[in-house]
Amino acid sequence: MRLVVATCSVAYSGRLSAHLPLATRVLMLKEDGSVLIHSDGGSYKPLNWMSPPCVTDTIEVDDEQREAGVIEQWKVTHTKTADILVISIHEIHHDSSHELGVDPGLIKDGVEADLQKLSAEHIEVYGEGFSLIRREYFTAIGPVDILARDANGETVAIEIKRRGDIDGVEQLTRYVELLNRDSTLAPVHGVFAAQEIKPQARTLAEDRGFRCVVLDLDDLRGLDTSHDKLF
Amino acid sequence: MRLVVATCSVAYSGRLSAHLPLATRVLMLKEDGSVLIHSDGGSYKPLNWMSPPCVTDTIEVDDEQREAGVIEQWKVTHTKTADILVISIHEIHHDSSHELGVDPGLIKDGVEADLQKLSAEHIEVYGEGFSLIRREYFTAIGPVDILARDANGETVAIEIKRRGDIDGVEQLTRYVELLNRDSTLAPVHGVFAAQEIKPQARTLAEDRGFRCVVLDLDDLRGLDTSHDKLF
DNA sequence: CCGTACATATCGTCA
DNA sequence: TGACGATGTGTACGG
Image 1 (cartoon, protein in one colour):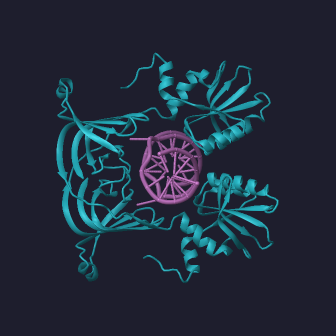
Image 2 (tube, helix red, strand yellow):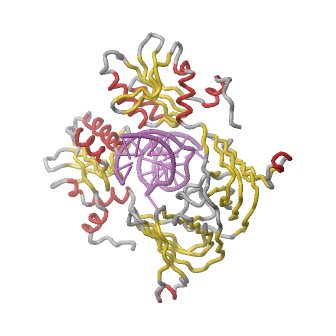
Image 3 (cartoon, chains in turn red, cyan, green, blue):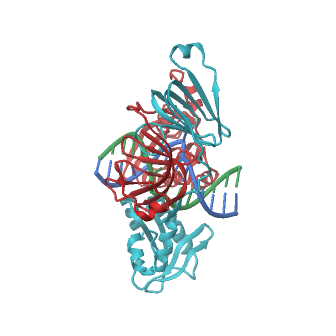
């Protein structure tokens, strides 16, 4: 990992063209060849970057650029696509290299898969007398998150999202439509479940006759007394 | 901007829980309080981070942690949500601060707006004998990207995306449905246009009677001989 | 401030 | 390898 603080301008050409005017920025050059250009604000997304696999070459600075104040120029080329990033450096304020080694990586907990698994284990959160048919019920247009049976013995398709948006309702609509064509399953009801349901999504879901369920990960874990928490 | 290279472990608690085992990483602390934790690989996404607005506090290292080798501990708290990031530092290999100033920001060229403008100027890419009615044709559920007339004088609604996904087909479906209720426009046909159309989206679009058109930005520019390129 | 649409998204998974 | 869905998505531009 090489860290450079430099006054520079940047040009990118790939799926789109973009350029950065002259300013002081942080350049992060990683071991795999990738380059990130960060400013002193914004969030984790760099102003500009090149993803691996790519190579960085130092290119000749022509007279015109030299007169404009360019002391060094780096050309970063993607190995597979034709993407090119050119960094024109006017002044280097800091330059250091560091040996980092391989990172063991991030361990996550509490994503959609957990919601699905936990709520399937406590299927009653979707309604009194519900029973699980199966998780990831496969159809021609993709897997239904949970297929269950309600207290009346009728089929229920459950779509689970972390954030309940209109897209999820459309997805559930397609599943319910398809499943209702199967006479051994019909009538099939729909339940839209998420940790957070947007008002617009709720309106659309209820308009289409789907029930909305807000899932709480802590509550689900509370129901499961045998669950050992990571923290 | 403060750049720190340190051997550390990290715990995050927010929308999900996550933690990073002990390893050497780069910590980027920005002027706005945001913190990025980068390894020496991957792409531009940090292993872990905290978005602004947030504040970093140094917290007391208790005896147990001190014995485990922790020399310093930073607690980064989001000001609006309850998200918390705790960085436990075992060793600092590098620590430097830099004055960067405000960044003028990125200037882009070649995004959806350009696709829409260029293809409207060369409406024949959508079909022989097509003529433009107007761009951004406003309806109750939002603007239709392009409204055109085909060789038979019938109305065509065109939905443009950079990447053609199922969502875009759903959007086009809603527009065509709505416009067909207007007797002065009906019958209204649909065209789904994108730089790249996913197979699933193409299948759905054609199933719904929409024609698919793949747009090439370079071709569109080639048609327009008066266009001055940036590079 | 909230909601929608776009993005050089990136990332994991599974066929 | 390519398609597909999820993301602590971020970001700009509306109302």
